[in-house]
Image 1 (cartoon, rainbow, N blue to C red):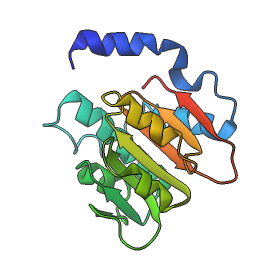
Image 2 (cartoon, rainbow, N blue to C red):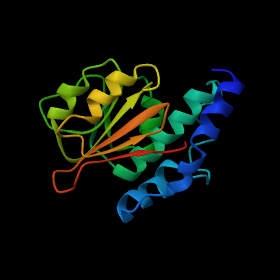
Image 3 (tube, helix red, strand yellow):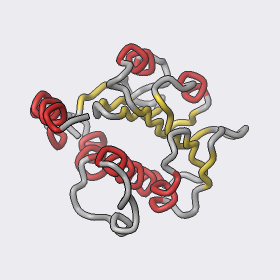
Image 4 (cartoon, one colour):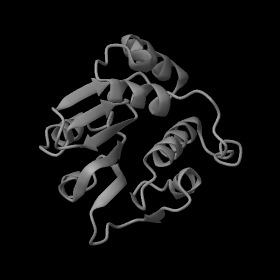
Length: 174
C-alpha cells in the first residue's frame, strides 16, 4: 500500500479519530487507551525492526490487545506470536484452537471466523486481519449473533463477544 492510499484512508476516516462519537464509556476507553494509544510500550524497541510499516503497526496493536486482555491461550493464525508473547508472557500462543473456549484469536479474513466465534466465551476478542480486501466476509462476521461489539480499523477488525451488551459496530480511524 503506497503513501497516497494510506493518506486517503486516513483522511476518509478523520471524523472517527480517538473515539469521537462513541457513547459507551467502556468502548470509548478501549478505543482511546488500547487501540489508539500513542505512548510507547515497554517492548516496542525490541520488536519489529525488520517489519514493514503495516506489520509493525498491527503488531503493536496486537501487543496492546494482549496486554489489555491478558488471555491464557491465544489462537494466532496470522503469524504475530512475537508481539503477542511480548504483550502477555503467560499466554500460550497456538496456531489451532484446542478444546477449551477461546479468549483471544487473530485470524485472516478468509479464515474460519464463524467456527471461532461459536467457541468464544463472553469477553473474548477476535481480531480479523485484512478486512479491507474482503469487505463482504467482514460484514458476515459483523452480522454473526456472537459478534456483539465490532471495531472496523480498516486494516483489521476487532470483535468483542459479550452476551450482556447490545450489538454495536464502530468505524475507527487507526
